[in-house]
Amino acid sequence: MEPVLNRWKAKLKAAAEAAWHATLQGRDFLNRKWRRSLQFRTVTAAVLLTAFAFLGVGAFLSSQIASGLYQERVNQAEAESRRGLSQVKTIFESSSASDRATVASMVGDTLKLLEGTGAEAPRYYLLTPLPGGQNLYVFSQSNTSITANIIPEGLAKEVATGSGQYRQALALPVGDSDVPAIGFGTQVQLPPGNAYALYLVYDLSSVQQTLDFIHRVLWIGGALLLVLVGGIVWLLTRAVVHPVSQAAIVSEKLAAGQLQERLEVRGEDELARLGASFNHMAGSLQEQITQLATLSEMQQRFVSDVSHELRTPLTTVRMAAEVLYESREDFDPINARSTELLYNQVERFQALLADLLEISRFDAGAAALDAEPTDLVEIARTALDAAQPLADNSGAELRLIALEPRCIADMDRRRIERILRNLIVNALEHGDGNPVELTVGATEEAVAVAVRDYGIGMTPMEASRVFDRFWRADPARARTTGGSGLGLSISTEDARLHGGWLQAWGEPGNGACFRLTLPRHSGGTLTHSPLPLPPAGANGMHRHPAAENVLLEQQEENGVPDPS
Image 1: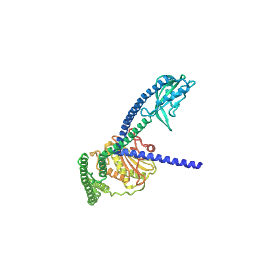
Image 2: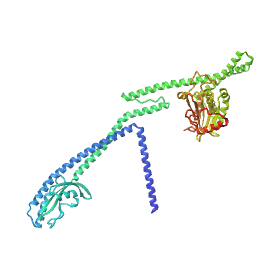
Image 3: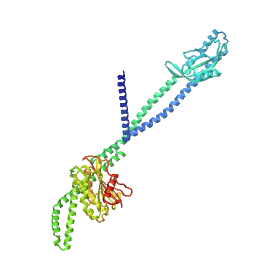
């Protein structure tokens, strides 16, 4: 027996879980439809408001109808019962019968006067002696099976203590159920001086049936009304929402690059004019985007072609400049100085040309990533060693803060070295001789390196534009290292090619910080960076706790004070 019960319990539990799961799915579906569909919200709101209005009006009408029907039947029954009970009471009081047989015969004949269907409802009489009666000639009599038990206690007490006619609603048992009824009662006297209670009970089931029929009609009519209202609102809202939905779909296709998509225009109403205006706007956008795309393609092709065409003559000029530069000691001071300038500017021109070629490869989508597991700490150390001569010239100190001994990730070493070299050179150039810190950190999903300087800093607006091509915060600022203005733009493209982030922060007078974040593995998705921005402190901003400890250890070893 117990295994069978366990199986039934398991089935009931599975059924309950399935019902709960279906309920949750239905709730989620309705939530999605409510959030995403204006038509669904409009139809639902209209149906609900109509339902509330119908419930209010229906409740009022039902109450008024029930009150009217009930009061009408009660008034009719009260008038009939008053006449009948008064007539019977008068006959009993004026009767000269004195023996048991005569009294019983008189009572039977008189009570027949109360039989009938008065007030369009069946009525029943009940004659029952009051408590305390002695030597009764007549016992309880009724024209049906009702007894004194159905008489409410309040009505029985009023009849027993009063001499008037009283009434009260009651439940009349008919078959296996109770139906509404109303009872009228009065006290009468029968020989040999005993008091009796005489009741007339009216069956009001016909009134209840009428009310039930009216309620059914109201419910059916309300349901049909809700369906009708919902259908009308659905049709009306569809006429407005469908064109808007189509416009949204077409606009999404336009945003996805399908510039040939247009709305279907029908009629001459407001929606048709809106569709025509939308199509006109889409045509203008397509024409302008096509023109801009053509111009951009021509610009990219021009930069690429010019860059490639300049390589050969520039190589020749560079070779000639090197020959002159190596022979500068044989020239007079003016020509020797001119040779040095020529050599330096050719070197700068070659760097600019290399940057233009790299940008053209990014624009053409030809840049390829040669990623392999590499230690970011080692790359940072190599980039610092390469920038050390420039740091010595500017009097700045370079610091490496490695939060982990090794930070291995899939990366293109050449591109990451180029990013760090650009960031370090920029930090030295704008650091005003203050220390430059490189902080390297890692988590299980990502690695990051931050380059922090304590120089002139930059505003949030400048930080948002610092990666734009050829943009400079202060074009008139004296530069010690030259540059094409493309270094940070190329660094951004290199970071994006790795699926990483390159972000900037700055504050005037408190320096700047550039943070590079890369996923551990190629194709990974970044959700956070191992290092805060900025990782070093100034004016209430704090270093990463581990970076603070590493830097303090380095300062204790080297005896260098903390610049912040």
